[in-house]
Image (cartoon, rainbow, N blue to C red; front, side, top):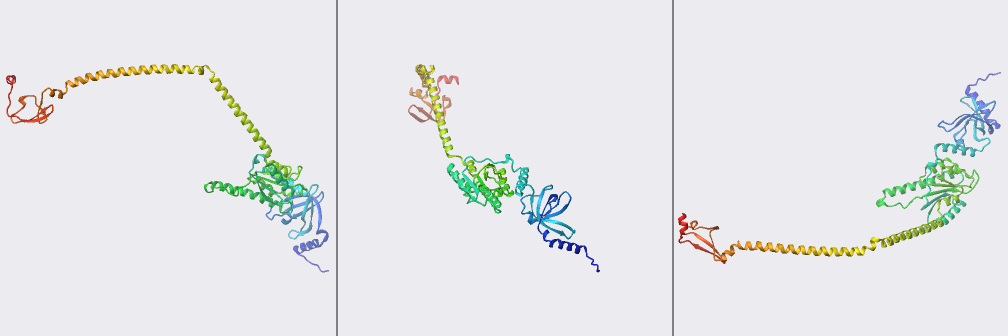
Length: 427
């Protein structure tokens, strides 16, 4: 008998080919408990073991299959796995290659819902303190829903009936199926970007020009009822994070009153139905008109009360003692004013007469001392040049003298002079 010697690689390859060719191992269903779960490799593959009370098998799920999962396996979780059995040639270890898996006892979608809910709650996406207030009187209302669903029809009817002043901005999306989560997230992001653009224009626009692309004040995100699977687009993480990061308040109205989605927990306000969301967002015009009428009546009553109080105060003042005696007091003041005026007039006249007398006295004295009056009496003033001469001794023969008379002056040449006897005795 010829002995055949194989290398390790040949042996492992041979064993692998046997396993790969076995039709029973190409599509097997295996149940067991997850152990040693690892997902931190950059490849995106899941590595774990599946065990029961007596045995254990290594398992791997490649990235393409992982992307289709709605939940994340955890250690201790019991799973039903569909896949194939083969051998990893490099280690010689046979293992289970998982192509799909379902949790035992609970659906994959329910498990994924619970896992995402716990994750986002721990991150604070459900925090009530971070909820944005819903505007009381929105000027523009955004709607994100299907263009062909009954939800849109119900929302529009209620908005038009309750608050027709608001402008509606509709963003159509798929609300079910693989395309729905990404479309919903992009719709929310588009409103967010529009809001940022409008804010930028209002701050930096020329002459304070407002953007013509004004964003909405509030968003209604909703769809009609359906199964848990139908509503699952609103349980996707991409939608939850888009709702949380929106700078515009969002009201979630998904499904019926008993339906809860991740979107409901993250939104600023949860409405049990799309119609209820519309009623929350839009104030009732009838109630507004009633409030306005009520305010007008209260204002009229307040004005009437104020005028009545003013009238009472005026009547009280008019009938008071001070107002009754006002006319008499005014007459007395007028009489006193006349008396004071007469006294002032007499004092003024007396002072005028006194000043007249003083003026006459001073005028008389000045008149006596007036040189012109002396000249009128026949006297003259003799000057040499501008010097007044008072003595003959001051005059010399041949001096030219100026003689001032009452009606003019003359120039004289001194031909001779004579000194009086008295002056001679003195000399």
